[in-house]
Amino acid sequence: MADDVRISGINWRETFPFTNLFRAFRIAIHPSKLALGLVALICLYVGGRTLDAIWPVRHLAVPNEPLLYAEYGSRGLAEKRAEARGEIEENYAQQLASPTWHVVPDIDKARAAARDGQYTREMTDAVVASRDQRVRDADAAMKARIDAANQNSDRAQRNAAIATAKADHDATLRMAYAEADEQLAPTRAIKGEGIFKELFEYETYQVVGVVNGVRDGNWLGGLRSDSPQGVIKSVFNFFAVGPLWLGFHHPVYFILFGLLFLTVWAIFGGAIARIAAVHVARDEKLSVRAALSFSASKFLSFVSAPLIPIIIIGLVGLVPLIAGVLSSIPYVGPIFYLLMSALFFILLVAGFIMTIVLIGLVAGLNLMYPTIAVEGSDSFDAISRSFSYVYARPWRMIWYTGVAVVYGALCYLFVRFFIYLMLALTHRFVGIGMWKATAPSTDPLWPVMWRGPSVTGTLSYQPGFTALRWDQALAAGLIAFWVYLLISVLGAFAISFYFTANTIIYYLMRREVDATEMDDVYLEQSDEDFAESAPVVAPLGGTTVVVTKDQTIAQAEAGGGTPADVPPSAPMDQGPGADST
Image 1 (cartoon, rainbow, N blue to C red):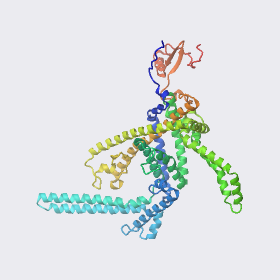
Image 2: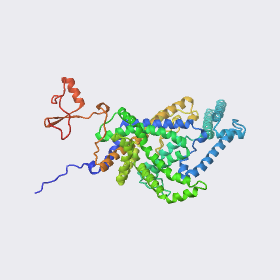
Image 3: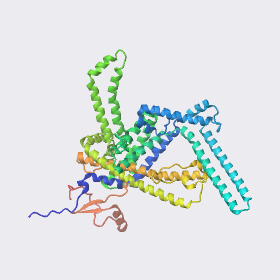
Image 4: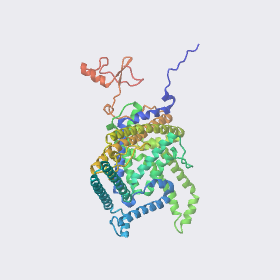
C-alpha cells in the first residue's frame, strides 16, 4: 500500500514567484531607505527651485505648459506659449501704467518693462500701501461711528450701532485684503512659472493618475477616448511627455537639471538599490554609510548606464541623418539621393539597431540600477543583463511590472491616507485651541496660516502671507516647512518603493533567465557595515552550532573566553562539501 502523502504547507514564494514583490512595502518603508529617498527629493527640489530663481523671466514657463505641450505638440505649444506670455505682459503693463498706481506712467515704457518683469517690487509696494490705507480709513471710520454711538443714551441702540460699526469694519477689511490679493495677480504672473515647478507638478499629477487608475480599474483611459486618464497613459506621460517637453522647449535647462538629476539619482538611488539588494537576498539591513560608500564607488557606472544606450542611438542615427543632409545639397544632391536609394537597406539596418536599443532602454531601464547594486558590476553589465532579460522573457517582465504597479499604488494610497490623517488631526486640534485668533483681515487666523488638508485629500496648500502680519507670516512659513517636509515623506516612499520593487524584479528575472538563486548577492562590506549581524555558523563534530555575535561577546565578558562548547579554532562552515576534519 502506498504511503500516505500529506502536504504540511506551501512555499508561496517558490510556487508563485511574483509574491516576492509583496515584500517590497516592508522593505521600502524602512527608515534608512526613506531617509535616503527624502534627501534625494530635497536635493532635486532645492536644485530645481534654485535654477528657477536664476533663470531669465522671459524664458520661464507659462501656466500649465507641459499640459499644453501634451495637447498641442511642439508647434502648437510655441503659439500657445507666445499667446499666454503676451497676455500676461499686456495685463501687467496696463497695471503699471494705470493712474491708480503711477509706477510707469508711459504705456510703451510699461510694455518694455513687462517683457523683462521689471518693477515687481514697486508694484507690490503700491498695492500693499493702498490696502493699508484702506485699513486705516476703515479703522478711523469705525472709531468715529463708535464714538457717535456712545453718545446715545439708549443702551440697546448704542450696542446695536457699535455692533454694526464693527461688522462693517470687518467686512471692509476682508474686502480690502481680497482685492489687494487680486490686484497682485498680474505681478505674480509676470514673474513666470518656474520650469522645475511646472515639471514637478506635472510629473506628480501623472503619479496620482497611475494610482487613481489602479484604484478605479482604469488602465486604458485617455488612449483613444475622452475617458479619464488611465494607468498606461499616465505612465507614458511621466516618462515621455514631461522629459520631451523639457528637452525640446528648454534645452539648456534640460541639460543642467539632467546633470543634477543623474548625480542625485546615482548617489542616493544607487544607495537605496544597494540596501534593497542586500535586504532581499540576506534579510539584513545594510548601513546607510556602507550603501553610500557603494554608490559613490559605482558612481560612473550608475550615471553612464542609462546614457550609453542614448549615445548609441544618437551615433547610429547619424547615418540616416547624414544621408538626408547630403541628399539636400544643391546640384550634387540628386547623386546622393540616388545613392541613398540604392543603399537604403543600410539605413533600414540603422533603424533596426536604434529600435532594438530604444526598446531595450525603455523596457530595461528599471533593471539597470538593481543590476549594479546586486552584482557589484559596471554599466556595461547593467545594459547587457537588462536587455537580455527583457528580450528573453518579455511577458514575464510585463507581468512582474504590472504586479508591482498595482501593489505599489495600493501601498501609496495607504501611506498617503496615513499622512492625510496625521495632518488633518493636527490641524483640527490646533484650530480648536486657536478659535479666537484672527488675521489682520479679521478672518480666522489658523485657516489663513494653514488651511489644512481638504476633504478631497489634497495635501498641498499656499499660506496667505499677504493677509498676515510679519510675525504671523514667519510662523506660517515655519509651519509650511514642517508640513511639506512630512508630505515629502510620501515622495520618499515612492522613490524607495520604486528601487525596492525593481530590485526584486531583477532577482526574479535573473532566476528565470540565468537560474541564479535570489540569495546570491555581491558583498564586499565587513560585518560592521550591517545593522543586524548574521549568525556565525560553525560545525562541531556532526552538529552545527549557531553562535550570534551578541552571544559571543556576552559569554566572553562573563567567562573570559569563547562560548563553552565551541573551540576557538573551530573552522567556519564551508558548505555541504566541507571537510569534516
